Length: 251
Length: 84
Image (cartoon, rainbow over the protein chains, first blue to last red):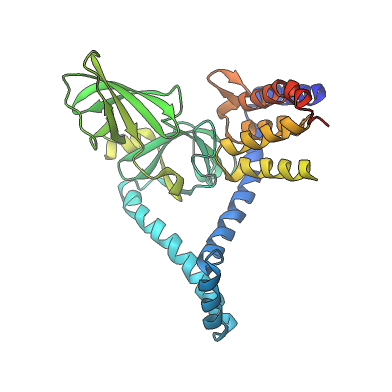
């Protein structure tokens, strides 16, 4: 046990001084695992592999009548259609940011205890540390923290410790990440805030999230405004990576 | 056999499951065995997800947490006579 811990400490010390090259390499290797599992999930999901026995039996009877080649084409078609729908949603985003990079989400947000996730674009694709990550035009969720050859690590703005200047109903406030995709804003009690209000990053015009709950106690001088992410993070399949200045100028 | 299975689940859950799953499986492992592989699970979490290997200024937080879990559950292993 002691030897293992010693090896881990030495490893991280080496990592620290090498600038994260080993971590980036590990993520590139893990990208193969995530990519394979994603395509397997898509294929089995499209084929109805996990449906109930009754449904499967009926489908099997029907499918046996079809030729194997036609069946394979149907599966492929379903997978492509699903991907196409996600990419179409990003078409508008790409038109808004012609220099933006559309990247596949490899590890689902929500798996990492640090509010981070891995995307399938890296240094070779033009991704750089500090770039912003958008889920739709005008909706930003995080920034690039580390870049590997083929992958990059995204840190959500909801990660604990993140603090950003935001605009809520034209009041300049401070947003603090709380983890698990959410954040909190302390708003003066005379500021009328309603569930569903958008908050915007100061000087950018990009929305960071939406007001999910307002906690107001009579004795408090401030409302505690809980901020929900602007998208269903676990269901994310693609994101767009944009340089902060480009995103701010074009919004 | 059980140890290998739970270790496998813990390792796989680092890639595919929410963070509480590796923690739960590691807790189960550490309650039954002197589970050095728990540290490996934490190490993998840090390697893949920790920005810069740090979180809130703490180096290798998941590795340290798993180490604490293994050490903290040692008395329970002996107390509950499930140690092997």
